[in-house]
Structures are given as structure tokens and as C-alpha cells.
Image (cartoon, rainbow, N blue to C red):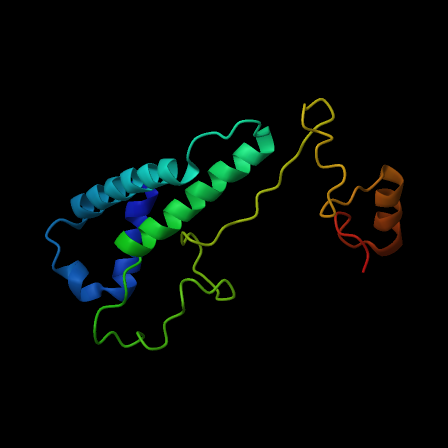
Length: 160
């Protein structure tokens, strides 16, 4: 069973227990569902990503492809896996909005995009492409050492 099948099984165990009990072979059902979800995500991802535009830089392509994947995954999971609670579920009225990014989610639940750091070394061809970005803060070794010795706080964060 792939991760989508496991997510579906966990979600249904919590929010659709009566429907889950009616499935004769849950292992096969969720294995097949997970495979179908994966196929649907890949097909939608390809469609959303579209063709490579001329002159597109490496980082632009990576961003476009990741956005297509995240959008496809979110849409297919909402349609096929993260179904509404079954009628009469005791927590249905109190359930969290799956699209609300401020809500806490259970570990391993798909839909919450984790931050992914990107490290470019000086020998990478795109190393200087982001030099003018307002989102980057370069810390010299001297600044890093000074921060560590002065306050013992997280050396990766600028002082407040």
C-alpha cells in the first residue's frame, strides 16, 4: 500500500468508520485506491505543469513543477481520499477545515506543505541568480560566531 492508501485508511478510520467496516478487504481496497490516486495525481500534474516555456530558467522550472505537483495532490486528495465525515459522525460539526493552514494537523497528513530548504554551493550555475532577492539573508562567519557567543540563540536566525 502506498502513502495515499495509508492516508485514506487513517482518514476513513477516523471520519468514516461505518463505511470502513463495510469494506470486505480493506487492505486490497486501500491499496487499489492509493494506486488510483497516484495515477490521477500524476496525470493532473502533467496537465497543470504544461510544456516548458522557452527561456525558462532551472529554478523557475523547479518551482513550476513543484507547484503543479502540490496543486494536483491537493485536488485529487480532496476528491478521492479526504472525504467529508459520514452523516451523524459525533465530531462532524467540530471538524477542522482541511484548507485552513492555521489548523493543527496530525503528523503524516498530506496537504500541509512542508518547507524545503535549498542549498546552492558556489560552484552551482545558478548560485548568483538570487543575489538580489529580499528573502535571502547572508550571514558571514564572523556574524555567526558573534551571535553564538553573545546570546547562545539559534545561529541561523537574525537577532530580533
